[in-house]
Image (tube, rainbow, N blue to C red; front, side, top):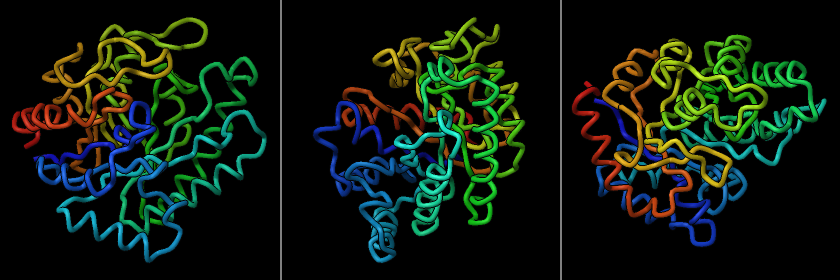
Length: 299
């Protein structure tokens, strides 16, 4: 069976930005609902390298998660204040990545998530070939440093960030070309990229087979999974709407068997309720939906 986690950012940003769910309450509820772990949004008031700068506080956090019967499935690193594409010098980005990487090591977090930081409109300012080389060169260095620390690196593509066409995503992961680097396949983002072509600059690029075909093309390049439904819309015209299971269009009975062949090197399935207005209230519903999928396909 797969291990089930959920992204804690759902309870700290967007609708929860002014009233984040307290960390201890998150641990208690996820434990009571039978989650195996959590995926840490490392920013705001929840554990992150800035508010836990010393090893003592980090060890206490790690122990608290373990005491709740949970484990970390990954870290969504706070790199959004950095510049990855619209700069000739990515040293500040790399330094911030290193800080978050060390945080992963101290808390025993196995994987670190990244994205391209700048929106798809950045190509009004920077040539796409120049931008891609900047991303690839930087991520090659980050992937090697992460490998040296025993942490894998995963790229979450999505409509809200640059390089959001299927061919862009395939090309970048191939050009980084590191076994320690792969794609985080979020099912709602995959639908919005491969079916809707949301926020793609220039001519839209979609796939006849939608998210399923995209997963097939990415087979062997996916190293992390986020499961959530999609209703085919964007949240605030920026990123994919993360609709609770059953409130969207996705056929998980088709998608999950393919994702089981994707080559993901671990057993985590992570629920992502990012920006959902009542994420705390629908967490139990989503856990039950994933448990049903796990019973069918997780063995």
